Length: 89
Image (tube, rainbow, N blue to C red; front, top):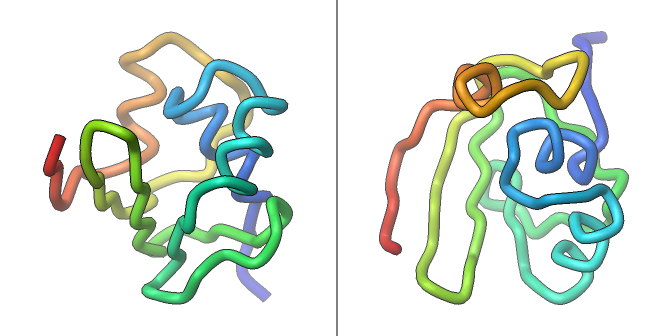
């Protein structure tokens, strides 16, 4: 079995949201897709290679997970966790 992390925790570590609580709220109010499948729970597992579709108020971002991370580090470290595929913001 490959390593994975909770979607809400990964969004927080990758600095898409400011806190885990906000990540959970974001996932409850927006339809985030993991590999084109809507994430049913905040605990949806995310693994390296997964593609996430993130709808924000200003547009949609599509990213590929490059690493899972171990902490919420500085912005440069957070950017190393994903590859931007599409940014329509």
